Length: 140
Length: 140
Image (cartoon, rainbow over all chains, first blue to last red; front, side):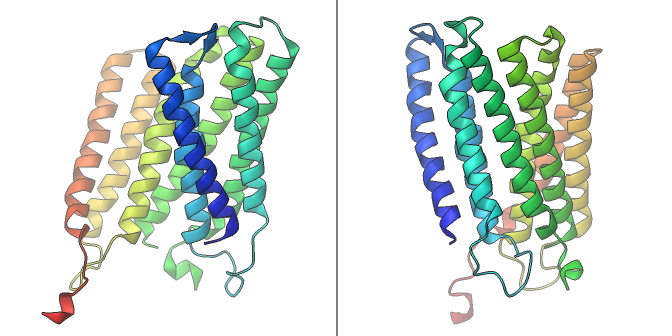
């Protein structure tokens, strides 16, 4: 299993645990100190956990782009890992505070940076994986 | 990788790209308040994330990787699996068209979900016999 896959699965497990805790908090009170937690919970589970684990495992298990280089540590998946997790952290550090800090440039900027980083992560993941999804005949 | 899996995984990747872009636009709009009409993208964002990306990716990968039959077609009959691909993606398109246009949304939503349910049912029938282990088979 490549190192980047291990990091992605472990990061995913942290988001899963955090998402479940936040879901529990949201069930007790829909808002804590005026912070809205519902979108944080959904994105921790769907992006931080499920999508990140799918990305990590597919980078590991899907047929390699170039034969004979399967054991080389790939670079692009680390870009995916870095962009995705900084994007998610930027989101969780900004979005919940939107309702308590109206018109804050830091909050708006954080959300914009998060949107760009997460989109960049998915673009990097797709550019890594798209050529690797081929029928067996096409790979020969 | 069988051709049906190639199509499902690539369609799931296209869905993921649309999910990422729509999510980024929604997040930036939430922070900056660009235009209220942008919220119409929300159902596209979450329906495509669940059915187009996650479910379709898992189905395509399971069809490829689950244990194959020892005799006859290795993954069972191929035409019904093409029907799974067509029903799922047609259903999704009908569902999303209804969500975007807003016209006859309930009817289109229902038709889309029936097509998606048909696809899932057919997939379950096709894959259920491949949920097994061949460990110890040669010993008997």
